[in-house]
Length: 204
Image (cartoon, one colour):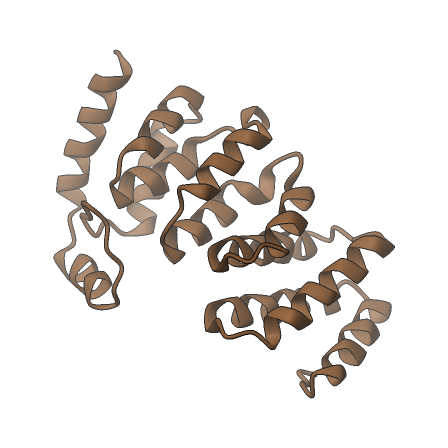
């Protein structure tokens, strides 16, 4: 089956998952996609499992300005085949918090160069890039990946800047990542505590 046919069938399957309440609630929160069926994440995950990993299909789905297509693309893209420049293009084309978060959780945290992207994006002046960067690092810390000394300094600097910034979603992501960082061990807990003291925050 050719890709266009596959996309057509996938889009038809979204109609069956349609959830008007989810879609309406998103619109009320100002999340505006050209098309949004309001399909829930577990249903999209089940669809992704049915399709399996598929690079070409993921690329084609991402190009559709449809919420479900973009989320599904992040679920079926094989992380080991995604080139850094493709990840940059996807990030550039991300304009909704939900898509940024889904991409970080479903895909970016598994990229062979995940940490590198996380540090680059965290240091961006764009809100969604920062959000994505913190989410990726948070997952890496959760999986026990310890940063080197330069990584530690860079993370703390960016996190403190974010915690004093205007964006609530970035502040929350930075704080959550700081918590995950502190869970890496005693040394990290101490580092996190003394860093947060600098900005008059405390979480432990």
